[in-house]
Length: 126
Image 1: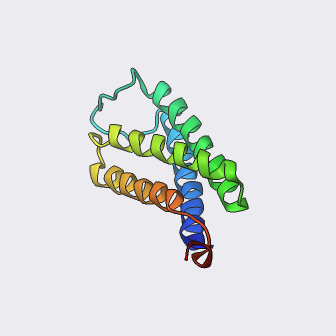
Image 2: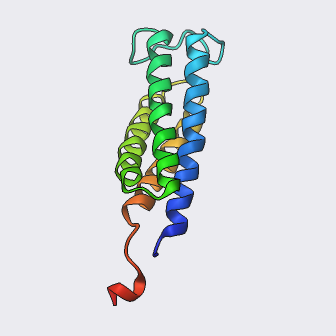
């Protein structure tokens, strides 16, 4: 299959970013000091941000594992979860680590692109 390596990469990245989002969400629920200088967020407090990150991380984990198992559901859910993760990374750019969030955004855009361009065999196309 054309692009199978790209889809495997996308699945691994979705799992990795999903784990990071769950860890960040737990840190936000615990009022950890990873957020500096009383940073203001789109959401009202760290508790809401924590739950949003945990749910987003769970979506990305489900999408990544489903994508790695080869399900068509994984492709659709991977595109949705990757797009939501990219939007979430853009909303977090104003924090203490803007370059990290920008890197996560570009990785998620690359993941969504890798899932979208996954196609048929090259012999079938010709």
